[in-house]
Image (cartoon, rainbow, N blue to C red; front, top):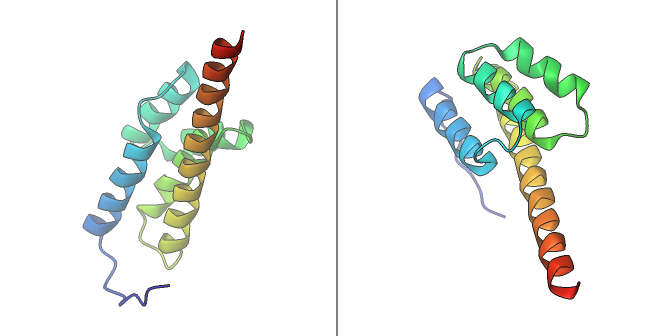
Length: 109
């Protein structure tokens, strides 16, 4: 474990973290993800949160749902970014497992 020196939280630094998370999420794979990303890009964070709240098993939406709150620079911003990053990692893990399963099924059938 590394010791981390805490620096002042700025919108610029939070935006860097947001971009990193969005890069991990990658290109939306379906219409629902495209709608959510479009709403996020337009600053309509309430719509993104509603989509996340009504699609509870969707890690892509969960990750985006957190991100709008991170941009408000509250004492919870670090936690919000961490939760968004975890959801993005869960999304990538699920996508990778699905792709590998399909590849193995194709190879074995």
